[in-house]
Amino acid sequence: MRLERLTSPEHGMYQEVMELYRSSFPFHEQREGDSQARIMGQEEYQFHLIYDGDVFAGLMLCWETARFIYVEHFCILPDLRNKKYGQRALELLRERGKPVILEIDPPVDELSIRRKGFYERAGYRENPFSHVHPPYHAGYSGHSLMVMSCPEPLSEELYQEFDRYLKTVVMGRTL
Image (tube, rainbow, N blue to C red; front, side, top):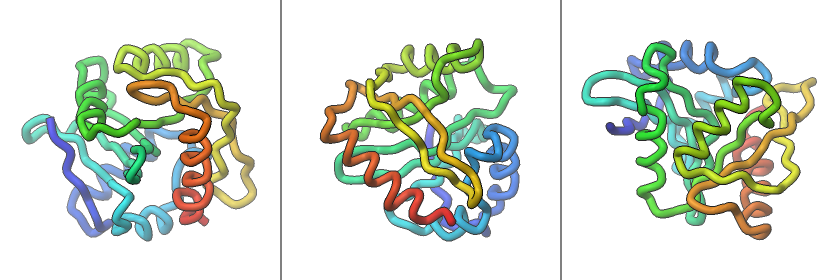
């Protein structure tokens, strides 16, 4: 299992990968195309294709700082789900030795409950913070999400650092 970083929308896999992205996330959770293209060359932003050997398995879009890694978007091809690809890809981030942070929908229905269980089995812990992800699109509101982290829950200090980073750096480059 390996991650291959893309730094330009000119890469031959970019269009195929963006189709997976658009079909895996609701519109309100998707970064706009021009925003995506603008950030790809940013040092902290990592647009990764997930490969198992030569087989493309999914994508992991994350931001890495000196203190944490934030997974903004992560998905596996539908035909390859439930085959440990996601768990193995997350382990690649964990090996970097920093807290890994991600957001999920609150567990209120079967799908969101299963998704939370997947992350818990991968070593992620629920955090107690009330969290609203800023909107990706003008005219939209932010949406409430649950923050999960690995290997431990976040301290209040690290959560606040992440939240500021999300609002000023990650989302500061969306609109």
